[in-house]
Length: 202
Image (cartoon, rainbow, N blue to C red; front, side):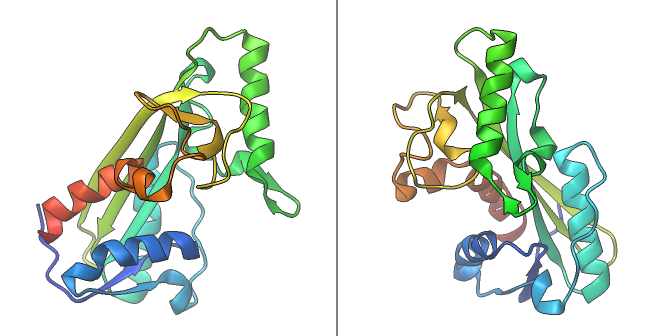
């Protein structure tokens, strides 16, 4: 596994919240974090059908364009009774003519589960894949998952995306109800990030 020995890293994202979150996690290592938006880069088309494939597209594109190491994240929710959907298309299910509307996406998932009369518990998992890519084409991949189930109605206003309908295994609160300080270390992204730090930064 290749160690990260630079002092600058680009987050291959235009998502301000994601950039802040990753920047805070890397702060103890003295790494200057910027984003692809800071370099005026457009977001490449995500044409793969796996989280790993799309994470690689974003990280390698950004590393090539800037000549600096880049870190990307591809994540979503997989619902077992829907054959793993929405999966890599999680954000797409929320797209509207006026931006992303996740309550619409959550409602769609629940209605599909009802149509199928899927038995309870309606198991699901949040998945996150991190890709750290270097300009020479090398990369390292780290994956994190949190198992749970889809519940209804939506519960809580914390978090984002599908958090209000995701109840993690062993918990009584959805990610949408959970205190962010409790959710942060158990999230799928945090699981992947701990592997990244252990593999490339520690």
